Structure formats: structure tokens, C-alpha cells
Image (cartoon, one colour):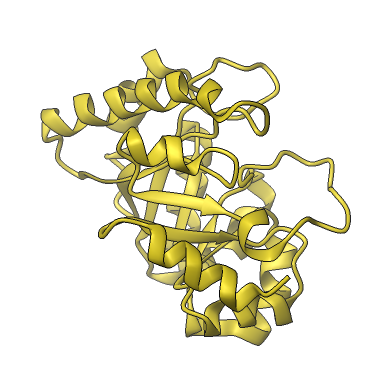
Length: 228
């Protein structure tokens, strides 16, 4: 699998203004560095420990996004590594991120994760509760709400993802129209290897792609996966 060639191809396909997040779960620091060398500007990681190992090699050559399920006991370490957390889905998690960022003098850009399919096994706030959560999060001085993210189905017909993406975009636009203080609805993160083309049709401006860049994984972890 030629990572550099894959990166260049994807970047050439993406419309202007769409950001590529290289979903790097289980990938080696060397593979991640190869992707960055080829033009990847954002690395997405699901696990804080994996990110810490890769960060030692790649460091500030890329922006780092957390795209997995963040446990409160990992927040202190996460805020020192990541430039954005895409998966905030509760006031409790937002409060912990705010507290840990305050301790290091950092303001963390965050996205609210929307469980647009109302799937019990997935993280995320239900669509109807998203606006209320955004309003509560806006009060935290060390957070900056920058948009929404959603997953959609991990496999199967990409068309199955479309209703999830439409629903999330509608919430995104609804909150954006409110012009709430402390909230800048700039990024809509949706679409993965299987579904990013449908997501582009539905207005995403941030896609999280792993397999298409790095090839199939050697193994799968069983923890929740928010990349693809």
C-alpha cells in the first residue's frame, strides 16, 4: 500500500475547503509520518496512549484531533496533545476538558458528537438535545465550540449514511443561524472511507479517512471507533 500515493490522490479529489483528517487508529508512528510527509495536515487518533507514542515521532508537523470516545480520566493527558477534540457529547466531559485546559492556559476547540442514528452502542448526543448541549458548553471559558461531528454506519451501502448526514447538517445550520456567543459553527465532520463521497454531497467540510489512506488494518480493536 503506497501511503504517499493514496494521500495525494485523496487530496486531489477533495473540494477546496474540505479538510482531511487521517484516521490513524492502530497505525505506526512511521506510517503516520509518511502520511504527513505526503501532505496530511491533520492526524485523527482514537486513543490517547497511541497518540502520545505517535506524537513523540511526528510532533508539531501536523494538527492532532481526538476522534474516539474520550474518558474523563484521560482528559488531562489529552489536552496536552490534541489541537481539537471532535467527540464531546456531555456537559460532564466538557467541564473536565475546560478544567484541564484552564490548568495549562489553553483554549480547546471542540466539536459536539451527534448520534444522528440514535444507536445505543454509539457515543454522541441525540439530535434534539444538541442545541441545549451547545448552549451549556458555550459557557465554559476554555472551550470553543466549533461545529459538529457524526459517524453514520461503519460499513454497508454508503447511501445508508445519507440520512445521518442530512440530519446532522440540518442541526449544524440551525445552531449556526442562532449566532450564539461562544459558538462558531465552522466545521462539520462527517464521512469516512466508506461514506465520505456521500458526506461531501451533503455538505461536510471535514472527512475522517483511514483505510483508504493506510490500507486495511492488521487487527481491529474492540473499543468504540469514531474514525471508520
